[in-house]
Length: 104
Image (tube, rainbow, N blue to C red; front, side):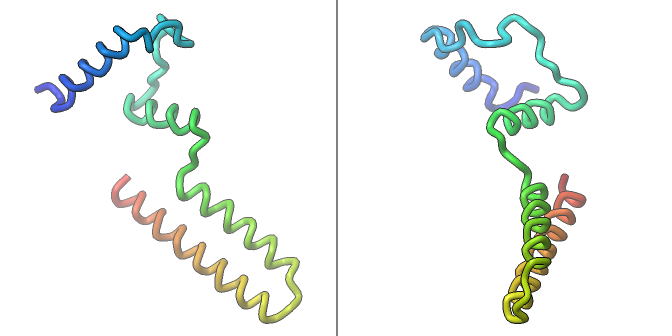
């Protein structure tokens, strides 16, 4: 059975070809590198080209930054505030990781 959007995608590609939007693209005529799951490969390429990062990666970087900031703080109130912020980030990361394990 064909994908429900296949006809629409074909129309969009044909219009783009007619306008010349697909002429002289880098990599034209070369095979796509789709090792493993093709959908994952396409998503990974789009994210890479857009310099996008997964929420888990962003949260891990924020946690590392928050930990470094905490090391430099000497004021008790600021340390408490930073520890609360760090705990919130760690909770968000745990939620993201659980969602990924459950739903992929």
